[in-house]
Amino acid sequence: MSLLFYLAGAIAIISTVAVIVQSNIVHALIYLILSLLSIAVVFYVLGAPFAAVLEAIVYAGAIMVLFLFVIMMLNLGQHTRDQEKQWLSLRGWILPCLLAAVLLAQLISVLSSYDVTMNPETVGVLEVSALLFGPYVLAVELASILLLAGLVSAYHLAKK
Amino acid sequence: METIPTEHGLILAGILFVLGLIGVLTRRNIVFVLMSLEIMLNASGLAFIVAAARFGHAEGHIMFLMILTLAAAEVAVGLGLIIQMYRKFHTVDISVLSEMKG
Image (cartoon, rainbow over all chains, first blue to last red; front, side):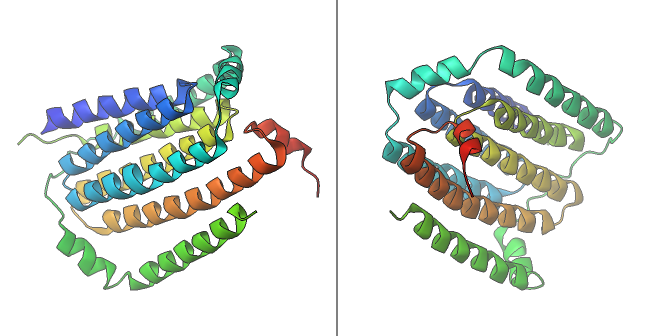
């Protein structure tokens, strides 16, 4: 099980790196789907099968299809791909990578003093939904209002 | 079944978050910026799932569901804005947005 965790984590990191250095936007999207699916495997190993299924359906399914539709609507051709290659100069990468490396080093140094193992008990759909429609029912209502607002504003913005 | 240390899960979430941050800082194509934001939101969701596995509670899963909802709404609005921007400027370069008026 722990081998599965490290393997899926490595695939997630490698494919995420491939997303941020890619110049072809459709290839980057496919790499992002790979990364999301491997994070779904990580969720499954960590005892969250419901979250894993949602990750595969909502993220890798719905949200990525939305991205794909918009990329098809924009119809970015060879011109954008060449421009993208030109924008990806080495000089622009140095400072952000340096800052992000400092941030990551801080995170790792904070986390390495924290030595507890996880208990791999599976938390099933039953427990999650009992909480969701018990004490957190207001959060579900607010999430539905947020989705409705997103729907209305996306319709309004994409209209001609 | 051998157990996984909690900090390894949190470090994985941290690495993914930092990669998303690099993407937001370096890319000039706005679609890539939105994709990097998705990576960052997903990494924070992973941190919540790791915390849920550490304490054996289902509350982390609830927070993950909230993040999922937030990501879906954010992507819908963001992609609508990208379509509107492409209609107006005929490019996906974010530096043209500095010429916006009003």
